[in-house]
Image (cartoon, rainbow, N blue to C red):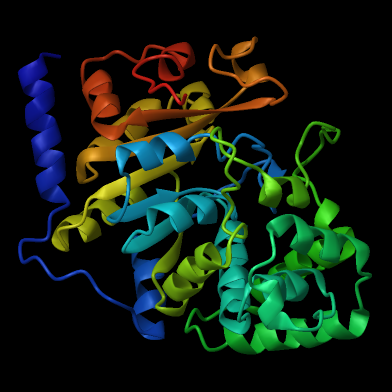
Length: 374
């Protein structure tokens, strides 16, 4: 296929997702608009063999320093997985964010988090509601405490069944106000997710179905106290200001969960069309290691065209994760002591390489066009 033909196809793909009459980006969505947007963008769900309650990427913050240098901010964020994307959002401060995952359970977990943000005034209250712990005294003082002290409080404080039951009831009530028409099965799934946090506490780890747990997977505590490569704590719970960025976006219904396959026929292209109609570009697309599975399943080409259809700018980036067992060896950019490696590339670089046919295998995906992180 010639370069001109590829460019023509790409142009048609972009135009097909464009709404002719542009609308201003919403400052907030009503509950009804939020629920409708989530439904309109979603496609049929699928199966994945992990219970992604938390991330297994200890390196997830390693891209933040370079992204600050590049001035990656605003626009729209698109990410996968549970709450690791919150830390990217806290730094980027997008106008709107979309959490896309093939598992409906992930959408339900994000609704659970949305309820927690709505119910929590500050970081320590969020953690106490999440883990069923009593609030400490002098909450104002806790706003300036380092995240290590918040983690230590949750670690040493026993959970209380009464508090868990009370928070579960408050969350169920809040879920009923979101307009999402959740089934009894959906609510049971959310309560199961909450129960895992209560039972396992801050030592909760990522788990896979039918596979032994990995000792090198980080705990929830590890993830929230992690630092970027400049030595700065970077999780959304590291500072009160970062938490409030998420709380504000969630309160405005601007963190929209979507069920979708990144290589699917609808979700990612529909998000691109929505953003283009509002003159927004993608500031960051976070894919974790989804490309590894798409390449194995012969879906990578559809993914590439979907990404190519997204509106982007000069500072737009793609964040991905690499695991040593995916390539059979450590990545050249791996950081000592970390099983996962975070990789960063410009979105335009990815599209240029993809349309030129440069990704012939996963090795190409995780080695071409990468930005140095330090």
